Every structure is written in structure tokens, then in C-alpha cells.
Image 1 (tube, rainbow, N blue to C red):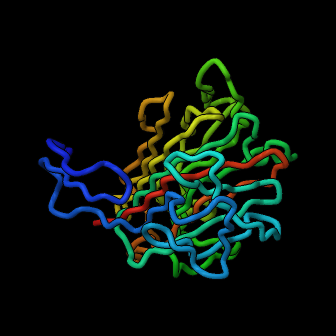
Image 2 (image 1 turned 90 degrees about the vertical axis):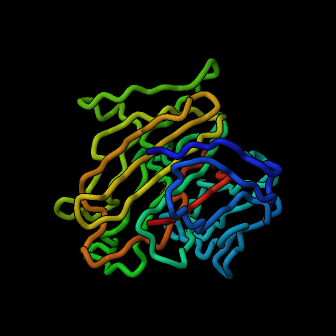
Length: 293
């Protein structure tokens, strides 16, 4: 049974404490692992790997080159923000980086929520390259996983991948239909293991439409229930000022952890992969990660 909120007390603004009352919340709430809203950054400040960059909760602990050999950092920027202050800007003109945060505990369930914005005159990373667009938003990783032959861990789940330019429609939201028999017009892939599959691994392996338009903040919520048997869950939800909250995909009934001795995920990468593009940069804000039983 879903929880029901009956009352909220306190001042609803950043940094204040509130109390939410209601019923059917369950006996154990989630553990907030990470939150980044740019409030501790300044416009133009670089985010680099020299030392962990503190966030309101948690920290950015690593910056990885996002393909190629670039060490271009991410930046705090006040050009486009979802909440007051700064957002995090990724510049894809020379392979913008991947930011990562490591959790202090293994979690049986992980949830990531974030807002992302692409200016109306910019393109999906890779659109202006011969290989075409490829933009993987977030990936959860089991940290001490033994790598397979190609160097990628088996327990590495990506939320989704944008494979379309995202043509901007000034008259309203862009809605690109998905046709299973026409891969050239597919827009977004479903959540699954990034590289190395294993027998029975749970995946939302059909193509699912995401309503995407540039010049608009979009929220995505990605959830994984960790299980070595039939209790695994993968889910992705989206919303924006033009699109009411909707389910992109929901998959259940299979394992999400390999091998069975693994306990859960400990690592998240933001902007997990984005191809170089001379006309692409984007902004991320209000990034939240929680874990629980």
C-alpha cells in the first residue's frame, strides 16, 4: 500500500527542517547518500579529481575522462539552474567528463533523481559526429567487482541512452514515436547492464519513448532493487514542465546482482558516457541519491 501524506509542517525552503505526517510510510525510511544542488559552488568553479568536492550531502570523489584522453573538468554555472545558485555544466566539445560519487554503505535498493537541461540551440552529444548521438545519463556500479575481459564490470546498470538529436519544437514539447521495426527512429533505450550480460540478468530490454525537448528542464528518477533471484526491479520515470510524471519503463522478476554473493551497489556515475560534439553542453541540478532495504 502506498504512503499517504496528511500534513507538512515547517518552512519549505532550502536548509530548513520539515515534518511530514501521514500513514503507510513503512518502518524504515531511505538513507540519503548524496545531494548536489550547486549551493556550495561558485559560477565558473571547476570540479576536478585533485580532492573530493563537498556537496550539501556527500561529495564528488572522482572525475573521469568521458572517452578519448580529455581531462576537461565539469563546472559550476549559473547560466541555467533548476534551483537557486548554480548547476553543474558538462561541456562536450572536448569530451566532457563523468562525475562519480561513492557511497559509504552497500545498499539493497538504490534511487537516483536528477534534473537535466539542454539549451535550445545545442545538440545531443555525438549528433555532429559520424557515429551519431550516444548519451548515457547515469550508471550504478558495484565497486569491488572483478572486471571481465573487456575491462567492464558485470554489475554496471545504465538508466537509459539518448540516441536521437532531440529536434526542438518551438510550438510545444517534442514527442518522437518509437517503432519497434524501425531502429533508425528509436529515441531512448531501456535500462540494462551496460556491457556484460549474464544469463537471466534483468533488463527493460524494449525501446521506450521519452518525451524530450531542448530548452526545458527534465526530471528523471531511476530505481534498482538489488536481488540475486527473482526479486530484482528496474524502473525509470520522467517529468517536466510540459510532460506530467510518467513511467518510461518498469521491469521486475529477475536478478540484478551477479554473482549471488554480491550485496548491492556502492557507486554512481553522472553523465556516464557522452560523445564529443562541437555543439553540445548541458546542465544538471538537484541530484539526489538514496538507498535502503
